[in-house]
Image 1 (cartoon, one colour):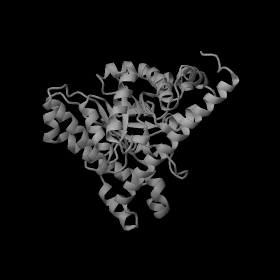
Image 2: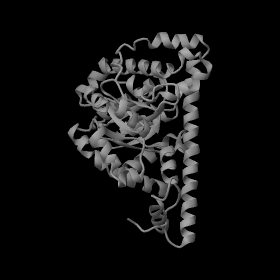
Image 3: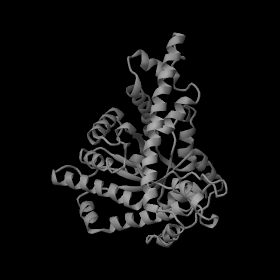
Image 4: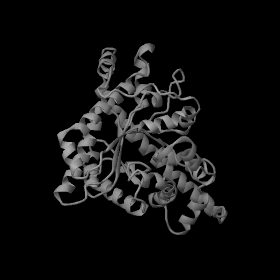
Length: 367
């Protein structure tokens, strides 16, 4: 049995961390669904920046939208939602079969709004309404400033993918925001069934820490943090607070592993898929990692409910000189800044393409 199918049968969803118009047009995404048990998809500004910059697949759309009077952020959101609606439709059978547990796609609010609670909520409402798909998550970063926007968006009934989580404490803050949003809905007599996922980034820990650690301790930090967060996740689901919400009809906020492509050339190219197998979670993987795991991946057992050796590993890494708490905050700040950079590059790329196509007098023929 293919390793991707083994993950699916274990109860872990495998999502693709990529979207391009070419993936949709040439049937590649449909093939991943049918052959590799892919049941969802995530996107971010960096992914769209690369997708729009590679080739001319988006040129016709950019030109048509420019002629219609759109530019900047509005043009990009329309362009992105065209792709995400198509992807959402491909995953619709999964969404329906699993009663909304699986089969989702994700679209991020502008990273320029990271410190703007009201602006983030307004953007989430706009994307949710414009997306016109029940299985579309809106991504909001789980920064200290973003937590309030997450709670408010959940209260408003908007499905949220909390992104840019790095530590167990950051995950717990995102989970708390979700719980508060659901509790407020119940108090207001509203339907508590609002879906959410909490995305914990893994490999970036090791990229940041490996240089400070002896080789024998390389690529252990991200997995240890993930195990710690998984323990907290399972404890939350077993808590009296959650059981009360579940009895009222609420659905769990699922834990999602993000940044699971291996960056260290000396490590296995399937490291963060093999070691993060756990029921009732999601792993969103780059295409390269999906291909590798489908080809030669193996499961290294199931993540322990009690976190296994996570605390011991984190203590050892701390003694070796890595301030894990400080690094978590830095990784979150750096991640937010990187998305701002990608966002600005993306809008500039679209503006440059629009101008170049206008100079030609027309864009490529619409397909």
